[in-house]
Length: 285
Image (cartoon, rainbow, N blue to C red; front, top):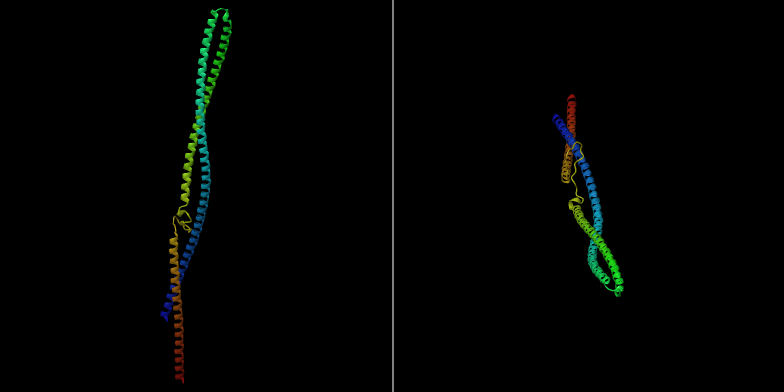
């Protein structure tokens, strides 16, 4: 009887220890579930952020490409206009060179006419009165020479001014062409950057990958729990639960056996007492 009570006490202690262990395992399992839910929530948030970032990047890429194409077309038009300006300036330069050459010819002719008019006036002054009409002609030639010289000087002045303006126009065209070329190079660099960003966004590890996050237990520093570790711990907890259920089953069976043994022993004691009482009754008789 004492041995049976001792076994019952040991069994009770073992049951209490198992219950305590079960509570600890359940608490840990609950904590792991909370951490797993937090990680899943964080993973969904990161997936949503990645999706949103991908949409924004796609929109920026589309708008950027539209702007680049429009800028590129504008730059091509600028270059075409600059080429036309260069061609027009070149034509103007040739025309002005011709005007300048003509002006020099007029000036030369006027000088020669002036020289001839002076010689004619000298000859007329030494001749008789029959050449009186020739003096009037020489005077008219002199006036014409003066007017021609003045016109030549004005043409030279206009030609020089136009050549200066054309030179300024060529300089502006060259500056515009360099600016357009620089803009094209900058746009190409920006387009390359956007293409790299788009490739980076389309990489597999950015599309909804589960990111390892630290557990939310108080006082934890730098500890990361991956999905694999969570699954492993969950399997351990499930194994503990199965073993605990098996032990609970064994404990229940042992308790039933103890109760049955106790009942049998009580029944046997009652039979012994009944037999002893019967024998005592017989002795008394």
